[in-house]
Amino acid sequence: MRQKQAFIPTLREIPADAEAVSHQLLLKGGFIRQLSAGVYSFLPLGRRVLRNVEAIVREEMEAAGAQEVLLPALQPADLWRQSGRYEVYGPELIRLEDRNGREFALGPTHEEVITQLIAQEISSYRKLPVTLFQIQTKFRDERRPRFGLLRGREFVMKDAYSFAADWESLDATYRAMYDAYHRIFERCGLQFRAVEADAGAIGGEGGTHEFMAIAASGEDDVVTCSHCSYAANMEKAVGRNVVIASAETLIASVDAAAPQAEKFHTPGLRTIDELVSGLGLSSSELIKTLIYMADGSPVAVLARGDHEVNETKVKNTLQAVQLELADSDAVRSITGAASGFAGPVGLDIPVLADFEAAALGQAVAGANETDYHMRNIVPGRDFPQVRLGDYRNVQENEPCPNCSEGSLRIIRGIEIGHVFKLGTKYSEKLGADFVDASGESNPIIMGCYGIGVSRLLSAVIEQHYDENGMIWPASLAPHKVHIIPVSHQDTAQMAAAEMLYDQMQAAGFEPLLDDREERLGVKLKDSDLIGAPIRVVIGKGISEGLVEWKQRGSSEDVVRIPLAEVPSKVLQTLAVKSTSGMT
Image 1 (cartoon, rainbow, N blue to C red):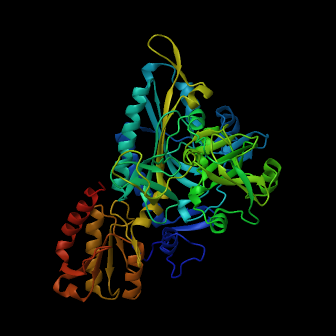
Image 2 (cartoon, one colour):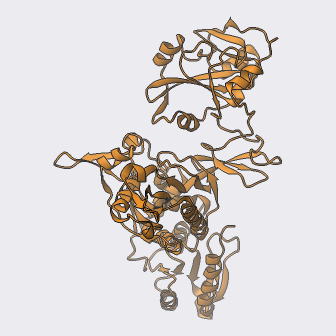
Image 3 (cartoon, rainbow, N blue to C red):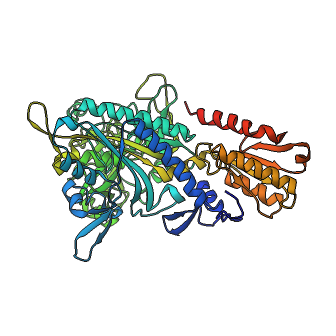
């Protein structure tokens, strides 16, 4: 590509609403442009990178035995009602009607559509297993689109679906996809971790893993062990809890000599920090009682004062579709007190107590009366009817649940992929059955496997940039080699640039030739911003057959090499980069 004709509208100023580095650089480098909140156009440079990602994904999916399809983005709402997910997705599902009043949704994912297709086409075990995938635009009405491609309303995704006659076959496909994801992200030059995860709205009966790109700008907390391979997202992570088997065990362990619970005056002390300051206690001696509405019904969740409730764990325990904190009016109606004074004693709603809160020997909690708390509360004695479980977020430096030597570390990550064992969640509801060798009919066992293809652009940049711009891995770079003649008027420089450009094109290295009539400083600034792996500057040294060679992101200085050596050096450099992956 010759830069004079190329559509690369770079910016000199960073847009004020661009928070993430990747968002800033993609806009500044002329890779994307915003149409509306969470909706972006891919300009030529951005589209080239997207195509490179798609090519890697497609190669690895096909190598793992998956076949490509293209499914409709416009999906009948009745399919979503049949699967039970029409309400689960809630306002994130973009809904519309045709001229005849039939309801449709723009696909955020395709479990329903692909399952219906298989139900129509496969009825015998002889046609199983099969895995299908697509690379397609998805739509989700995000409440707060932000960070450019990291959280959008319209995005490109690879979704694959496997169909098997038994769990052993599903396990084999799941492992093949898990391994393929490692190869994909390694080829994209990413540092990542595969972590245990919650299935969320996708659901399923088996295991699930998220693939997280490690980045300080990530929105997700990733929990890892300092010693072993344990890794999970915050929604799934567990600590080495004080495990209490049942409420009966708890009651039996109550110290008979413990003083009786008593109410005391705590005017204005609503929050944990205010109680710690006002009472001189540690937050670990307090029980906080949070009132939630789970599908419209109230429930209380108890956690130690220094812990945070994990709403995903609570939601999963209750098998609730919607879970939200009760507002102040609802709290007063349920507890008889203002927010901040709720407590477990005497509540006549379901109570969920985290293991750590239930393990406190004596504690302080709200008294269900405004400006009052209770001290000497003993779980099991003063509120025996509780449902015990793990309902909290783990914390930094807790002991690892998987080994005795390690402690937990919390790092930030960007979700880039997710693999699920769905089991029969969708096949049973949508009638995808097969007849086995004995003639019996069974629901097909499914798996699904997603990658945020457009999101990968941002994830890669969050790991590969400096103060001057993007540093693309060779596998994804929109142009592998940037050729820059210093003077457009110098015939010797232009002749050398043209010759090298032709050589690079013939070798398949997708060069970019800066043939603009611009100052060298402008050309170099744009080159750093765009982030091609190799830059070759052709200046006055061409009279001696020499050019300036620079690898983007390398700590090495610019070096002068013979023009004749450039093709072989490009080949050697890019070959090394393409074979060096993450371990």
